Length: 82
Image (tube, rainbow, N blue to C red):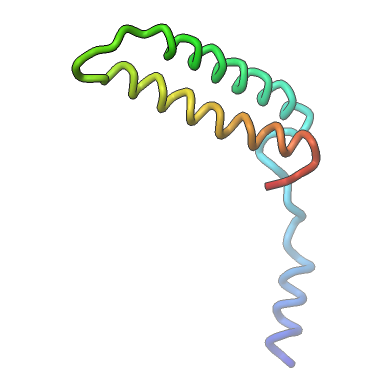
């Protein structure tokens, strides 16, 4: 029981969780990220086809990353903390 008591005391002594990004900013962050995703998706659809698709891969990867973080920010805005 000594181990449990020490862990319980440590748990009570630690500060509560505080996110790095204020939750009030999440809707704006989600809007910007998802807007950029849709903009890059449109840009991707208008790119000329190249033999070596370096630019296409870069645009698609950037859009995918922005979309992923935008969806997570939107979920957190709605109260689904993932």
